Image 1: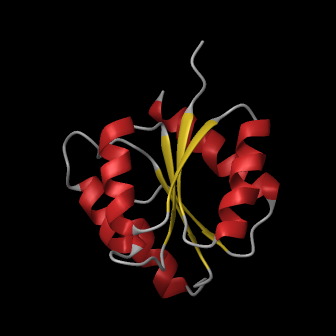
Image 2: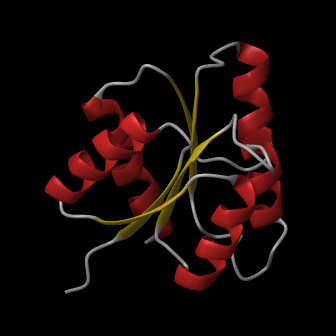
Image 3: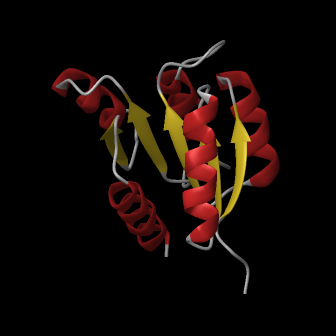
Length: 125
């Protein structure tokens, strides 16, 4: 049975490393991108099961990446979980209105991110 693939889009190396370790231990395959443009190319190539997407990214922000994914017929069904230090209600609503499945404010707990991924995978089934 194939492991679910999670693309992590984050430009802070320590967060990328902690998410990779957490997700791989939980049985997921991971791939990473450090900016918005790189993430879109990676997602188009891999067609992952879930995308964990930071908002503040170089080149193209997470809102723009989410909007590009949700407007692409080949990618729109991939669940997006947004991560951000911006935890204000207006930011959360913006992410959800663009089509994100969940919005998690940093700092986040391991259980919180794992539950969001599990729920996103179940919603695809």
